[in-house]
Image (cartoon, rainbow, N blue to C red):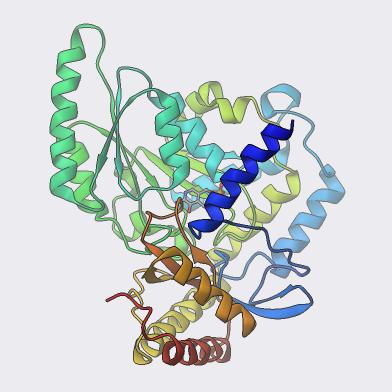
Length: 406
Ligand SMILES: *Cc1c(COP(=O)(O)O)cnc(C)c1O
């Protein structure tokens, strides 16, 4: 027992020495533009609640009603004890929203990735991932047992090289059975905020007869008509076999989803182990997500989107004006790449002392030496909130101008 604790303490010390140690910060308020940490109100620029729906009255009312009618818990896996109506309402709403034949929801986006990839491909198949895809997809690809190939971030030439290799591999294996080739990317990348060239990726996967899965975790709710996503905005959603996303970001609730053909969804109900062997989420989460998707498609949804985009433009220009490198907003994720882990932690701490919460994103969320402050905006912020952040960053800039990498 003692040597176990000693070993873990050694590992924790190593993490601290590398600036990689993480800890939970207790928040005594709802998520929103202001959160209470340690008795202090902080301006919050850390959440993925892009439209401010997590604490929206419509979603809260829907959740409360679902608790009153369906109770607090779901009882078992949906295949075991029956599948509560709020999940079906959510999936019908999602499929109509994404204009697909069907949808399936999971407890989290992570579980959606894990269950879906491992159901669709296995030993003898090939999975090709963008280098910067989310950990849930990397873990799923590894667990699937398929051959794994990584292409350089958003690099179409490198993707084509990997597809050519997979095509050869597929033919060599063809005596046994046809190897499937699955390409997985994100539409908006979670830690860089840049967009994938989805039209070109669709053309390539068609050329090599591969399948395509696109994770729209950071695009759903924000891009496309009514917030249907970037694939919709680019007019390619009908050519993407597997459309994935989360209900926990712009949709303000919790859970993960897959949208696609009826056959895909029926197959996942039968084969996605993270769906089959896991208790259904609480019905309140499903009801809140349904309310979130409905709200996206109203005039209020349009107003929230246009508000948050205006704030993003304001923030980008003001932060650049005070001398920081901040990525242009392809999205609402605005990383300030610092590089060194400890320096990034230091900057985040300095901001927190001014009651502003911007997280230091470090390895393993991003590569070593690519640490960053990741600023995210929500429609619940005001222009005054943005000005307050900019003023704090300007003060920090003058104090720490030696730190920033070019
Ligand atoms: C957050 C995220 C997920 C996981 O979704 P959860 O619902 O939080 O489990 C998957 N993919 C990407 C790109 C994400 O950013």
